Image (tube, rainbow, N blue to C red):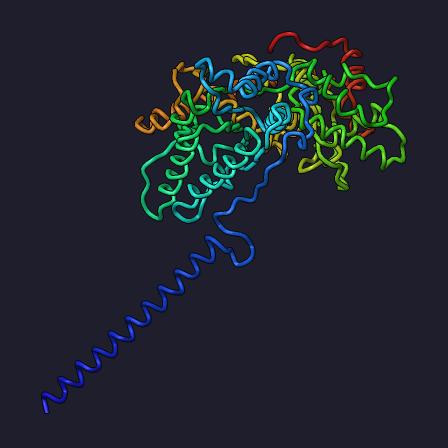
Length: 513
């Protein structure tokens, strides 16, 4: 009997093992099929490893060198890269270094992609464009596989057409420094992608291909992997800044060329001065918005009026239909009047272009204060003046009512951010601690030291509030006049604001308060 039970137990275990084995094989087959389906077929929606890009011939891009407006200095620097690409074989024959990569660094909208397309047109080469995030992968090794496919495609094109340009926008997505990683393999996959990009740019192959990688990023060069930044990878680093006065004037001319506009009344020099800090993309957007406004107003041409309205709409936001009570209108008016008086009398590098109590965007009212000219180096006095300009509305409310409203939120955010940078990053606090205490190295310092820095930053804000209050009390009659006008008219433009200060024989400050 005991032997019978043993045989039954063995048979049962054998059946269970058989079922487990069949199940494992079945599940493995399903997993393999699903993996193959995702990687190579994509269920009819494209492979996970497939790049959604196609080659565009240089002549088809249609952006010529003369079409690149607003960056004359950058164009001169970029032209060297164009010549190195075009004269690649001559350069190689005399033993010169072949150009492999060009890195464009600059803010969004300054024209990095536009310049890359112009280079491809000028060199008459096929142009492959991808975004850095397209080269990432959710599966370990997928990002590296996409990069291999991209460069293989480029080599095939270079074989046929004598060269190829690869443009990688937002390259920081696949060019950050490599680090050791654990867990789900995300860091390992990222490291593999960077390694593959490094290997492809080295070009260590039996045959030399005329492939140049042009990359663009908004981050600083120091935030990218050092191996990519060395010579032989990205040989040229071109920094693209905001357009200057003459460049902005040329941009307005360029974007209005193919439109019907008032050729007699359009003041391009005035528009250039008013658009300090605008990128080429911003200026293009202003002109496009002006054309829509002209159509909406059933006009045949674009005039200065449409351009100025477009700038206001973009800078301040669309008007909202909100009905204030008389008390609310007064509160908003005092807030905006505070900004107007402090900026006009105490912030010499800004113009008070407009004040309004009509709700726009997310604000209940606004004061438009564009900079008079581009400032490359900002010192302590400049930052203190900027803080006071932001605090003008808060202080005016405090003087008039003894309490303030939630309308000070955005102003506080800006003013506090500047004050903290002054102390934590620029060494401008009263305690005169020197160093950038925002870096990771700072973690080793005691909480009490960090507290001292916080106090330092708050003291800057308090001192700015004190000086702003002194200025407003001294000129309170101007504040009340502006409030009266705002309640009456809802908006005051530049000339109307200027007239009020001239009435009180007050001119804009040339120095800080």
